[in-house]
Amino acid sequence: MKPQPPAGLATVATGGAAAPRFLSIVNAWMELTGVLNELSCSMGQPDFYPFALSARAVSKLHFVHMVVAQKERAAAG
Image (cartoon, rainbow, N blue to C red; front, side, top):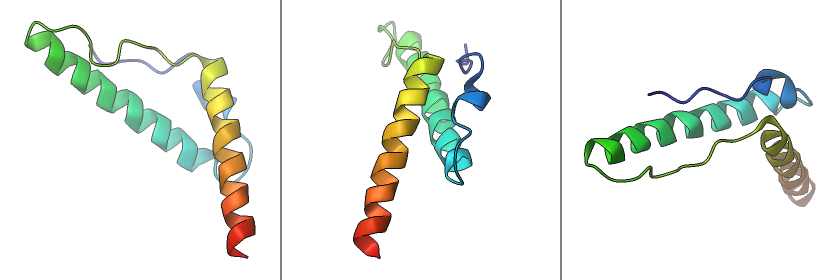
C-alpha cells in the first residue's frame, strides 16, 4: 500500500522559493518509506517507518528547513 500525503500537504509549505524543493523532499521521503514498509511487510517484519507525517509536522519541518537554508545563505554571502 503506497502512503498518501497528509491532507492539505500542498498548502502547508507554500512560503518562499524553496517550498517546491521542500515538498519534493517530503514526497520522496514518503515514497521511500512506503517502499521500505512494503519490503518489510513482505518479509513478515513490522513497518520500517511506522509514522505518518501530519500537516502540522510537515509545516514545522518546513520552518526548520527555511531557517537552515537562511543560515546557509548568510554564511555563504
